Image (tube, rainbow, N blue to C red; front, side):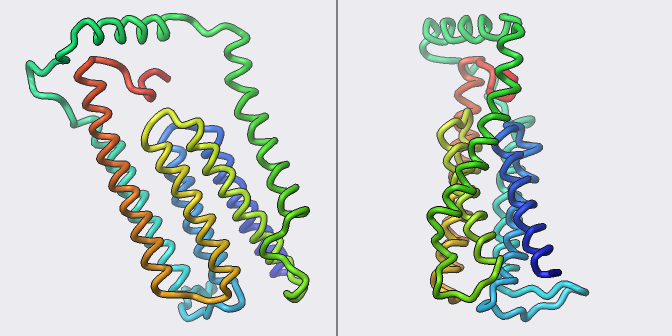
Length: 254
């Protein structure tokens, strides 16, 4: 019964973190939620029966494989957090302006028009109901896929609630990642969505292969870190372009 409660707590943690990244767009919410996903996955990987628990941290028995995922998450989230914080200190040199002043003026006029329109009751209601209804739909789709199309939970495996929660977790992370990619407003949101898809594929691959490969660990960790670095570079370049045209970012628009 204790194992069931632990696995249910892991699934609820992943569900909560994914829900935060679906509903909210502020990096102060999404980045801690992303870090929590890596921490929870470190616990989940350590509970897989074929992963040796060779690290003891008080009452917790973890694995080097799970700790590697946690370290990857710390590095990735650290890169994204530094990128978001660096916007306060990044500025164009004095005198730098757009070469196409006509286009820049039109864009600034459109941005001011969007910002000056006060949100009505319908807009406020839609802003509240749309993320909530989307979250409910994603949860329902996750449970439907995990029950009707189980990938990890097969008759060949011994009966264990862990496999059902693994199916729920990788489906949920993949759907949340795709949602963030499709409805992203900034480069960093696209990166967060892709990172969720990567950890979902990592969880599925590790569970299906029933093994822990050092090559796979290094490859997926390297891809995640390179993705975060590429996202940081593109975010800075995009932010500088907005400054050059004197346009507000998505964060400032909110």
